[in-house]
Length: 325
Image 1: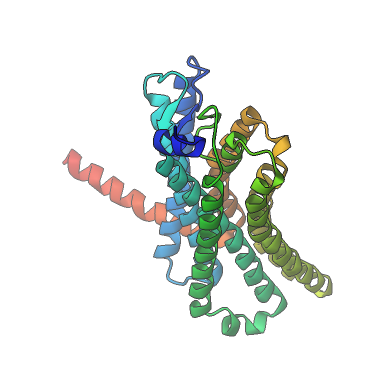
Image 2 (image 1 turned 30 degrees about the vertical axis):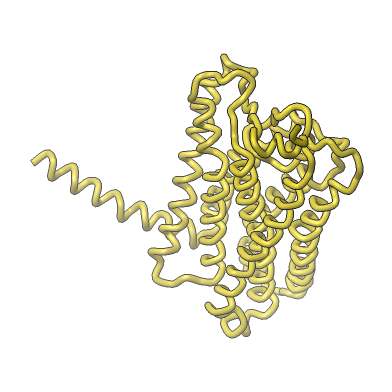
């Protein structure tokens, strides 16, 4: 007879999604589809705005990478969720293979981890810009930006591979049903049939690397920025510095707040139905808020977006005139 882990390896898992709410599935599908399209549009618009700009400050390059990460982040989860909502009811859940589940979790953690490191990198960029403005162009060079961006991606990838290997080496027994709409870490650990704290150590290690260390770097950067702002005598300069940091701080609080609440807690506090509802927020709502926050708070990005839209509208109008002729 096959062991529980081998049986799961051959059979895979069942994603329950929202199968227990058949009457809500059409409305939920339309809502999530609208959020998904808005998220794709907002992040693509920022990518186009930065790409079409004549000058690209380092912060805009980091923002471009953040939008690319958010696009990947949503594409890993949302299309599968929408497909499951649109398909006829498959009983208790939608089947997903063992390998497919592992790949989805690994990509989700890799992109989320890269975003954690990237937010710390953006805080360092703000620190240099505000505390050492005369040395900014000499320190934050395009080469340094490229190396930091690559390091963020490789760091997220390394942590995600280690965590995925550790989680999928756990024995899964009993029910194969994941009370979730994607292969999230907490849902998988909830199915693991070991009762020791050893199974939580890989997640604890990942939280230390992805949440604690970048958080310390961000706090150190903004501590130095706060000290520099206190010494700044110009009210206009102080307002400008605060404005450049406000959008980054808002996104940082959203990202780290959701991640810390979801993953930096013991297994005994897991609640599958509550965790699934919260996951809807950080996979569908927060990726939509990020481009809105940056386009509203960052005047340069807002101007670049208006420029892109201004170029598109005359083309659309000329095309309509050609059709009418």
